[in-house]
Image (cartoon, rainbow, N blue to C red):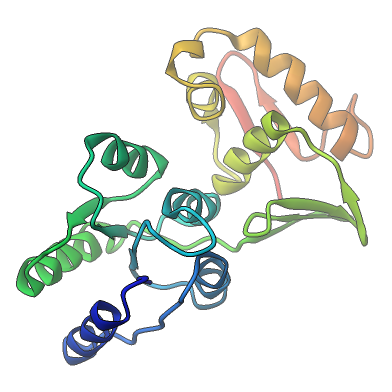
Length: 220
């Protein structure tokens, strides 16, 4: 995915020669749809897309998949690199670059992920509810369920790790930031709100499960 047609064509040729099946996307929205549909083994992403910032695309993919993401960009500012890596990118290559170096970094990213990255399904079913991680929305039947950004952040994190305990500190760090890791009262308040919106019986939760003193788990 790159906004420079010449580089995109060169990448496609070189990656095809290396045995990769390549899908190109000209903008961020197309990239998100392609990732959800094809579950790629690796994503090469330019930050300067015409519709979305690359960091938004990274965050959108990271909401449901651990696929390796290699950022390719002309932006050299350290703040841009930090933002991309914090959003979930695995590596950052600055233009201009050597094709051999790029291919080596891509192979390394794929090797690191081999055997550990199991792409998730971007759609999670919770009874009559549908949690669409790619579209960032929750439906009850065909009706949209309104969640605040914080409520969505909690649900997204739990859905990304569905069936697995997510510790309180990890949830707080992911949703609020590292400076809030000890504010467990935030979680109690917002999880209670989520249960009122999502659970058939909030007093007896079926989906948003508390592991006392440890964290939360989404049973899907």
